[in-house]
Amino acid sequence: MKKKTIFVGMSGGVDSSVSVALLKEQGYDVVGVFIKTWHPDFLECNEEEERRDAMRNAAHLDIPFLTFDFEKEYKKGVADYMINEYKIGRTPNPDVMCNKEVKFGAFFKKSLEMGADYVATGHYAQNKNFNLVKGIDPSKDQSYFLWTLKQDQLNKILFPIGHLKKTQVRALAKKFKLPVAEKKDSQGICFLGAVDLKDFLKHYIEEKKGDVCNENGEIVGYHDGVVFYTLGERHGFTITKKSPDDKPYYVVGKDVEKNILYASQDKNALEKRTDIFLLKNSSCSRQSRSQGVFQEHFCLALNNLNWISEIPKEDKNYTAQIRYHGEFLTCKIISNQNITEVIFEKPVIVAPGQSVVIYDKDICLGGGIVI
Image (cartoon, rainbow, N blue to C red; front, side, top):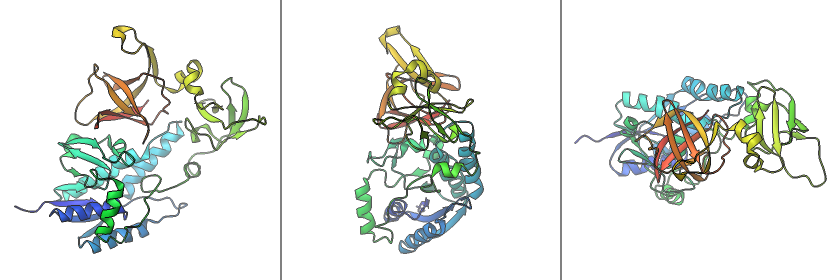
């Protein structure tokens, strides 16, 4: 039988390089691919250094090496999307869009067009019977960022290290004598790296000074533009009304139209003051007395929905992750045409634009974006 050919996205890091080594060990014909993307002129770019590391690993593992240029796709699908979302006061998740538009969009499509039987990446996730399953290492699981995958894509996708813990991957990197075995993990936004997000956005969004108010509506400080902040933040704005025993202030709400940022010294104020804050910042809130499900519960409305393997049932409990590495919260799902409501047992704080991802035990069913 003809050997299967796999194109592997190689970033220059440990995870993707170990993925290549494992696939080659299993007898596949492996092609390493470095993905070139867009970088703004004002940011320091280490793309060539990362490409050299990827090339060194490919040479060490004796596989062909290619470079795909997806600068336009990244600029439009990730960077422009992120900037435009912030402009209207929402908080997007660029890593989700990077996977959708670039890694499993442009890269996936071009690889298959060039003859690949499968595409593989170094994500900590698993593909079991064409279901997207959490990576075995809970501290590294990346299924949250992959909720936009389609069933027919999973037929062609491999995650070679999803069944391993990070410590095992590091040990394999040393076993295979990879040039990057000791290299630190990358941080920050997909492909852009560890950028100061506010500094980045200020190159595209004009600053506009406004008031910071406490939960009682009293002005306690100022900020440089409400769109630069998201719920839960405690830095970047100035408090002028101070006392000797002041505690840090947390962002608990924002009014984009009036350019007002609401902050509280109690980071749980949003949950406690549902009359003021929760109804402004979550999509819906309701009470239910039918069948004793949840006597009081709160929900988020989602759009841009994607269900990978099955549509959630309304009479079943699931868990939802409202941020990467966040707690898995018990929930129920109610679908209504293109809008889905995720109903929680207790109030949740999620900024519009963020991803909410739904799980049935370890299986990632899909998710949507908070309206």
